[in-house]
Image 1 (cartoon, rainbow, N blue to C red):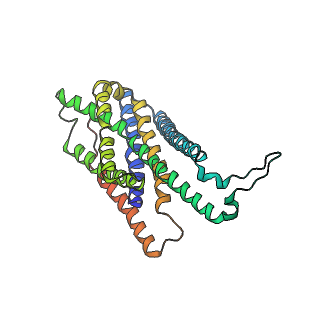
Image 2: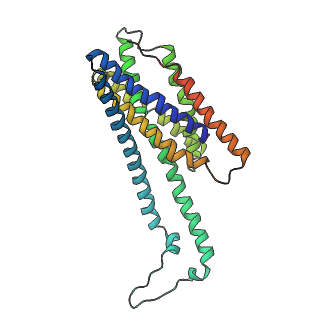
Image 3: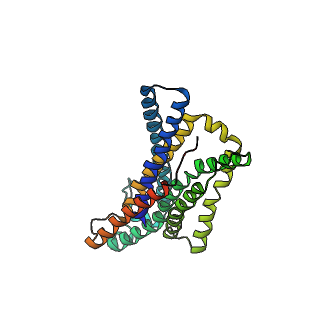
Length: 276
């Protein structure tokens, strides 16, 4: 699942959101009759700025959660096995010094139990960020359709929207299960993640026209999401399935899964079209 998701999200980031960012610049270039040099400059600018914003945001989110985990572990009594101090006028050796192996093993288990569930949540928070532009665009398109623009919402649009949510919700559910959530809790949280579309759809319905006209902001928004997806795929998902002790058979299955994710993402993106 992680191998499949890695291939899927890398393609979705590069040929999906980054392409959307470049196409947004290209559409504005046609309207404003920009020179070729200006188009190249705008392309490079919105891509680099957006990617830097997305990657920086991802690093910051990961740093904040990791810092909170470390703070929590410092308060955990089981971590005392790693602490050994010699204060002036005092020299003591607790009992665990003489059962170091057993105490260290217990401490490592405590560390794993405390950190693993919380670290699993980082990727989910990053995945949820792309609901922001999708919700805004969906709300804007619904508003256009309500005003009689029948080209704003097509069958292909809904197919691509629904199909690309399948691997997202699947990885969301299983990631929550790995984070020690019960099946019911994981299912409810998955549906709660879907509900994030609603507030941003309202924003899109009322502010979508302004966002569409502010083309550079729209382009940067797409490339920012691409940066977040690339960070999630490379930093969060690849370590889940890449291990040196993988057998040849398992590694072959992993490679097939990665390319299956790439092909599936290509199929999803094939439903994409621009209407002018």
